[in-house]
Length: 239
Image (cartoon, rainbow, N blue to C red; front, side, top):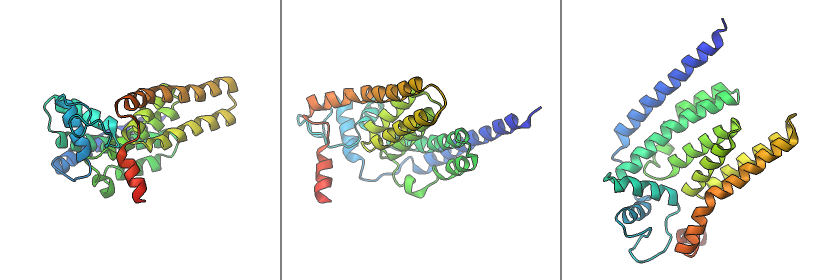
């Protein structure tokens, strides 16, 4: 009997146990944490939940949040009566814990279990990432890591979907999506498998990704007049 599969199952069980313990600890310590950066997004979520529309000030269709998907998720939670800052903190804690778990499985797929184990331990306990709880960054990281995991398994639909969600949560998620596309193209160039099938896989990924993000761009162009937030231009002007 080969002991390797049993050993990996035990390691997987330990990874899940660690994830659960970290999640409980994060929620226990950080559920009431507050900082001012996400409150623009919180206000969009509150107005949407209360029927005022996807706006910061009622009646003014101006896009000021840089994380539209996060605002939509928080609006759904607020609609159920959950406090928005609490929901943001808990979602961030869940994202950090699961992001570490995604790192573990990426290490297994890429045959670098040590790197996966280090990511599992350090990502959800990073003080720098903990300081962003309440904002969108933990969710973006989790979506990107699970998108990479889907890409590594050649699950193209899931990869395109998750990385599109990452892009809609934070615009620079497009860099991760592009990296996944480059990875698929390199696989097509270096794999002994039939080129036609591999190129179709890479092409399908690009088409699916575009289809997944297109609805937001069409909506925001019609609703706000531009898919780019006004705060982005202000930040660029400030340098």
